[in-house]
Length: 320
Ligand SMILES: Nc1ncnc2c1ncn2[C@@H]1O[C@H](COP(=O)(O)OP(=O)(O)OP(=O)(O)O)[C@@H](O)[C@H]1O
Image (tube, helix red, strand yellow):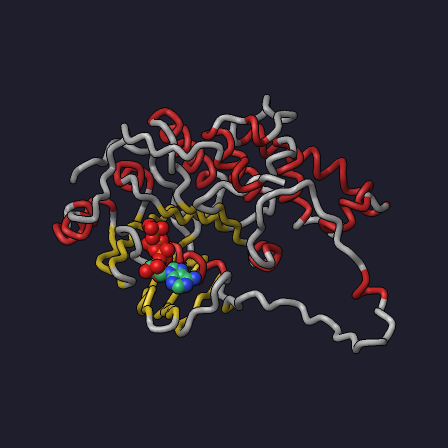
């Protein structure tokens, strides 16, 4: 398995941004992730590979704080990560008047796919992520999708934005301008007014990245960013990730496409059955016979001609 091509020279790598030590995650009796360590430095692109069910997404979820690991620790910018905690609701006894704050109904956005729990908690930590399945707001334009990502960064917040309060109006112009800038950055500058549901698949993935970037993260985590892409879209996705890295961010990426990973990443962590098989440079990982062995018999390959493009992914997820 030798698939490394020439890649742009990486800028100097800085200090640790993300440090995971001894991360373990159990689901009942199932040990999905077992004692995994990973350090991601400033300006680094780190790949996470492994056969199906190896624990990649679970580990990702522990890194972002979506899951609280059963044991181990994740530090971001030196600060321990905490899993998001749902806000407590005031209990109302039967027969008692409902307090105004409990009676407020959050307006339903023109729906939309489900958002992960407490995305703002992840954002506040300076991390952003995309998901395996595209989670765009199908009936919103590209610009609106990115603006929604940006609202998690503004003091007005998503609720105020929907209600069009005065604070929202003050911030809207800046939000719109930044969203346009990000669309230009990911190569979607001409698709501003296109509805997400009508955009080509590769563009939808770019749009997701633009929305994640709208939160001004220091680290972006991409879960299978090229799933279902054709070779040209995959090449463009690689160029975009290099561009993101060159803009000063660190990147962690899960992918099944080995050619993509080995050409993109500075370091690669290979998980098998929840445990670290090897962590090293692309050269070290791709020449390790255990990595090849781990994939044999799984039915997985890195054939770029496979047409596994999900159809109507965005509309399926985001149907009203
Ligand atoms: N919420 C959950 N509850 C119970 N088991 C889970 C849960 N999430 C994942 N698992 C199990 O944990 C193991 C690791 O799953 P995970 O999705 O992290 O693997 P993966 O490497 O990301 O796989 P794939 O490449 O197929 O996405 C699998 O056996 C999976 O069935």
